[in-house]
Length: 603
Image 1: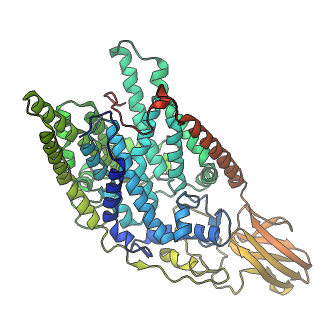
Image 2 (image 1 turned 180 degrees about the vertical axis):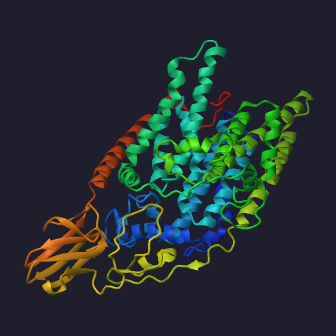
Image 3 (image 1 turned 45 degrees about the vertical axis):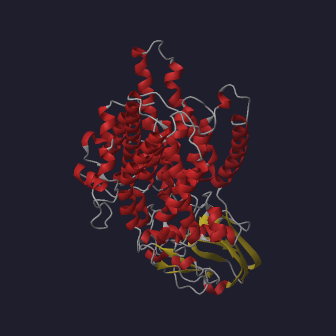
């Protein structure tokens, strides 16, 4: 075992272990790279990722507009789109099916490493930190995202890493760069739900740390300065600022979309304490959305908290308090203290729903507390052996192996139970792609993935946001671009892409050119102002022969793109400066990501 405060040996072997375990857990998904899960949301998310893939790969355009769904809707402005995810590179290289499965492996492996580092940061020994990582990343909520078909929630695996960089930034401002970059990545990876959830977690930890430091005005000598007390709030603000600047290309259209078209609520949501407990502690009996076992962590993890609580260990008590708060949040509208109702009054957070998803954070902090508590037991037995003068390298090895076995016995039921839930999920084979000129079809909102792969748009719409959809759109038209009246002349498509349509138009008299897509302020034409015809894209033209071009340009996306590019350049320079190698003195000598023990309380 490695003393706290020291970097653990052989990090490459540890990461290799995490890769192997993650591959084993995700084998069902990885073995079926071209299959989707049976839940209808798999089709929904695959469709949005695939249309972004088509826009970039086939047309060389930034995915701003999606003509393949609902008759044409915003792509970047869609809350759940992964159009500018950094992991789009995987999709472009391998295809969306295999790319999604490898993205899951990436998130699981990096999530294990992030949880390990965060547990070490709060004093867990390597075995205890490994236990915490295994319990959290392989807890039931992560298995449930595969059952429900929600790959955009994979980024919640980075919650411990976000907390790690946040808490490092309480002492070193430079770590706000890493925290902000991480949050920006999560947001761009379709994390419009995951980001405010993680933001609430960061905010709660920041508030707790600030209150803890303020309490030291009374108990500590010398008293902390006001700047020291307020520093956590400043660090969180800087992380938010960095994240907003880096993700501006997505943040601006999403903000406009949320203001104009807020998400549709499910109505009253309330879950008894017994139901939330059953989700976390009872094995799964039947696969429904909020059934017992859907957030399965197991009783043993909760039981491991007891020694640390009895020992009055600050880290275990901190984890238990945070787990309790998120447990109460998970109960929803009628829960004790009505925490969920209060959170819904906050900006942005009001667009969240399904409070039971906060059991993700219950599992995180219980896992962290269990890992720390196991480390305390190891320390206690080691100290007892030393007092008896019976501590030797051999006994230390036996002790380490024994506690490794205990950690394995605690984690194994959780891993086996939740891995079992992935069996038989990936049974929906992707249809063979077929290239043809784009046109709208009636479609099917529960099989959205089928249509874009064969060059068709689906007018059947399945979205949480009330996007505008014209009732005049048709899925059986011979031509997608036509004239009104039809006898006024002829239209021939020259070229088509999601953001640019070029047509040859020959008119014997004035007419209206209509495109079988939803109107949007982003549609423009050099030939005149784009108008609405029953909610469709239209252009009034005089008699004559001409080439007409319709282009989709969103000024907010253009502004956001430049902001993101400049911010990314500044971010790279700032990171290179802040983390460059220096002489072994001062702040910069501290190894990036090194583990160290924090003081007690909520720090």
